[in-house]
Image (tube, rainbow, N blue to C red; front, side, top):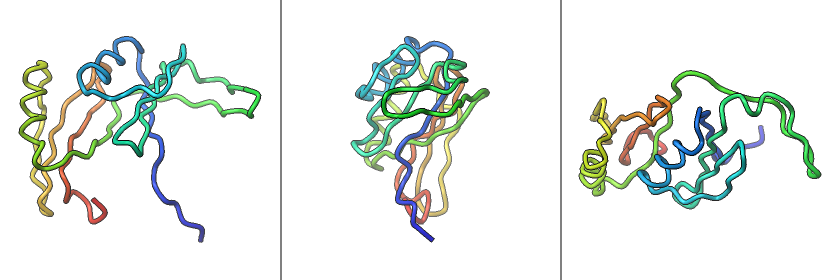
Length: 137
């Protein structure tokens, strides 16, 4: 069986790209990689990409000189987790509090990881997780 190495992109679908930009760039500090009318892409940790698609804008095949991308979309609150260093957990808690972002949950995992849960403006559940969550992290 050929091997899958890692997940390169994770996608969320949002109702307002400008509102999402303000949250992911200004509040979470993600650097932008690409901005179009229907897609914003962000660098996460130098090795992963978060794609924010305008909900409903990618329901048709997108053709370009390099090929085509099949239709896709999503609805409802989705979930992604961001890796953080354990020693930065208090700084993240303080930053979220300063920004008025409510922490909805906190979990201490049996492997020693701690997770904080909060929402973006579109209702997606975001998680900040310290090492030890999974055997692979």
